[in-house]
Amino acid sequence: MRTSVIGIGLVALTVGAAAQAAGQGLTFDARRIGMGGLTLGRSASLVRYNPAYRAVADQADRRGRPRVTIPIPLGIIQFLHDHPHLSTDPAFHPDSARFNPIVAVNTLLNLPIYLEVKKAPTPTNDVVVDIGQNALRANLGLSAELVPGDELGLGGSSRPLDPGIGIKGVRVSMMGWLHDEVGLQLGDKLLGFLRDSQPATSTTAYTVNGDGILEGGVAPSIAYAGRIAGDATTGFYVGGAVHYYLGVAYARTSATGGFVTGNPIFGGPVKPSLAAVTDYSKAGNSVGHGIGGDVGVAWVSGPIELGVGVNDIGATLTWSDTRQDTLRYDTTSNTIRTTPGPNHFTTKTKLPVSYIANVAYVIGLTTLGADVLNNGRGTTIHVGGEQRLGLFALRGGVARDQRKRIEFGWGGGVRLGPLGLDVGFWTHTNSLSNERGVTMATSFSIY
Amino acid sequence: MRLKWLWAIWLASAVTGCGQGHLVFNVDVLSFLSGAGTMPYDLPGGVGPVDSTVSRFFPLPGGFGKSTVDNVSITGAATLFNVTGGGNVLFDVFFAKTQGALFTGTPYITASSGPVSGVDTVPLLSPTTVSPGDTVFNADSLWVGVRARITTDPPVLPHMTGQLRLTELNVRIVLNDKIF
Image 1 (cartoon, rainbow over the protein chains, first blue to last red):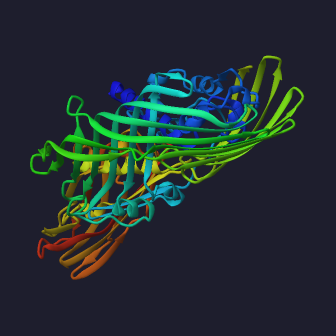
Image 2: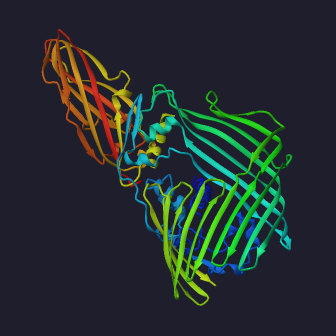
Image 3: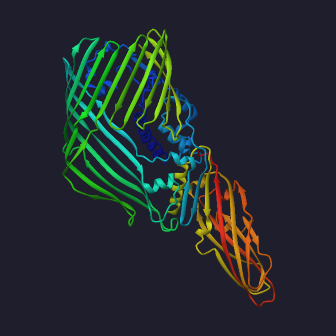
């Protein structure tokens, strides 16, 4: 049991990390935290999403990007102090009377990297459940507001590896790519039961709808990035890349799962309900094929810098050896039955188009910037700035995360020669709460 | 399966119920008794007390076994429909973790009809009882027992006949186990 819990925990940690990363951008840089997630230097995002930035010289970056940023994980220290025996901690052990699902979920949604200086308050109302032989009604009170009415999703596309060689702006590479998306949405009946306190009815399905896709592969690529006008201080840069996507494997599923109430509700057996259709092409089958491209431009002119990049344009893959299976819970045998469907047929998948737009402006000791990033699963917006005052720096920023919630960042730092110490505060709404929490990040920087 | 059902409710409530709030279950126990809430009697006069009992197994949400019960309040009511003869009827409700332990201690709720004779209808309304931290409900299941303790008036004839009909039996269980 413990093994399974730890296993589930690890998976959930991964999902939680992905969710957090997708939601607000997982970063270890307190400077960035202090500017609401904005990056003023050459972030990985800029180069990843705007191919023109490969040609923008580092010296054009005058915003004091550190060479190395070392996070000070005060949150982990705090967490380990609070939970010294994690594997046996009853708060995370479902078999324990002291198992706390709220703490567990909030820990996953807010990985304890940063110090949580203000925990998001959670509703404190009573939860009342009325039970009769043919009656069931739950009144969650204010907690009902936390029941998600919209789809919960995470994912996007990524490029974990891109080794290659470049000559005079032309680069040939073998890019690894990955596309993953998961979406979950409560069915109307379950949503009404949990959120609207509607009474349950007999012989009724209460379900969660889910869909997901996972695909990955490599893409031989040829790219160009270069300055087509101006010089190092004032220049116009363009970039582009063409990828020939080779898909190694993919799986796409659409499922509805839950249970069907008995008749009467507590008189008859509750029957699990599961129906899923899965298309997949295993590794070893014929690879998927597709062509797509990236384009980007960047303009650097004295104190101003602008850039726009778009990725995976037209990236549709064709999988010629797809199989489809149908899963259904058999209420007679109480087993999940898989029914093989069509085989060796052709399907198509499409990588999400992602884009970034950024602007930065430097005036004296003040730097302002903004960026808009969509990695295929919602748009994040960051606006922020930094004011240097001798050895010190003050920072602030505002962000809109993928769930369209506004978050705020502020902080400061001190730089002594090649060393800097920064602290940043950032609001978040990742917890099971409708109110914001505040985290504090700290990091050392080496310039 | 029913147990899993109830456990799922408890878990869903636990996950969605946040903060320092309590998890409160209002259980209509009478609805689960499925006909056992009516207890007919036919006894000669001058006997008693004679006990007539019914009992039912009742599953609770699985988490109860690991939870701390803050308090339990029980509300019950019955109606005595006497047809012939006379005597008095004591109406008791018991809860226990095992069937064998039913009817052995003090009833959770009790009400007396007082003297009845001939055709008579008597409401038996017992006051609601509250049991702070009752460990009987700190389990995944329990037994519910209803007892009619009948004492008839002489002579032997006519028999005391009629029925005791349970009209309400509600249990409110408040958990306070720091799960939130």
